[in-house]
Length: 325
Length: 308
Image (cartoon, rainbow over all chains, first blue to last red; front, side, top):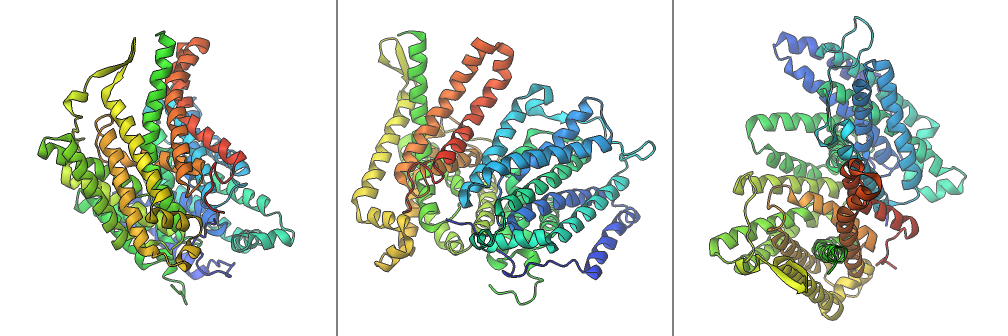
């Protein structure tokens, strides 16, 4: 039994980041806080920050699922570890972002390395279940360790400190930091996919046996991708902890992993913009629907169902020319 | 009986009871997975819908038994409708589309139940004459209602076994599970078979929901945590295998129950109350995932793989 993630167009290994499109998105995102302030709707800055953080986490998951062809159901573990790294360090009096954020990345990457080393020996559904199992173990650990808040979680006294005088407490400033980190990570992933590494990863998704036969150590490539994705998810977790000022085991729960999967499937699995489009679409939908009805989850489900039936390759797939069914 | 003996016997029965209920959920899930290669996250929603329908019918008629029958039949209909209208369109799609599609149904089911019944848990009371304990052995009594669950679980499992092993429908199901293309080539109408399998699977979910309803709360979202356990069960047992599902369910039921009861006790004795209070429950919860990882390490396709 194999799992075939919906590859946008098999055979296309390059995912170019066109300067015109990418730059336009960046300019729009950069212009958002002043525009929101001018309209007196500062609330949107927080929402946009959240979207960017989830876009980072989802894009890192897409690297594994969409480009590596490995459906991981435990991505929340890495996000949660990153968040806990920030929370625990702050509890110990370490508020510097220069310590906490690399620690979050390292925690996510190291755990991903360990999980990947074991899980990547399995395939398909079994891979889904093993990654889930590791994430669940971490979840129950977080629930039980009273020193780290247990079930109640940790409330953080403030945001991480980048430098004396550079305060992340300002939502606008925090937004720009998140935007910069997301843009860097996004470009990094794009470069990686366009490089030999990305080509090998995607070719192994298409035909693992053939890649192994012509001499590529597929397992090692996948493990590197998995570890990298774990590190980026850890960074997203660190930012999430900073934004909400709160860390709890709920971040590690399986439905968080499911949520990230839903975002990339919605946006477009194996599409460079899939994570971004999916996170934005999902969180905006949630926002709009919940403003109109208390039963917004019903409407959200209906929309998701319509998308999956009407757009087999996700929203980002619509923009791709020559798309077949 | 001695205290330790009572404890072991009681935990064994609790484990058996939980394992049998897990089997009812896992049986439908493993067939859907095995035959159609379909991941159905909405399977737990049928368990929830079943519990709500049974509780409502029981309250309306004043009889637990009539409620159970009506609710199970109603859930079977809901399951078949779901298959015909939506799920059928997802069979040919990849696993990820199935995850998104059935996740959407899960959201709609949760919210739909909230719209109809409200956010508060609703009551489902077992028949009054089963409320007390029964003395099984001198010095050992066990709740009568839990015994009933074990009885119903065993009966349904036996019925299902006979159905799968001895009937024409069961033969087609087995054929479909081990080789769908071959079954189709031999003239099995897989489409119709599937609607039937879905109805049976939904009915089994409802039985589990109705039996566990009086013990656990009947509330929105009750299907999710048990769904994950059911997935663990079918992976341990080997996807598509009914026998694997039964064995996996009993294993998970007993290990989970025993772990929750015994690990904190053991920790308390050897490591002190502090460790027992914090690490005990965590290790008990982790235990089944460790079990799954261990099984997959030695048997990568589960204990009883159905596919050749």
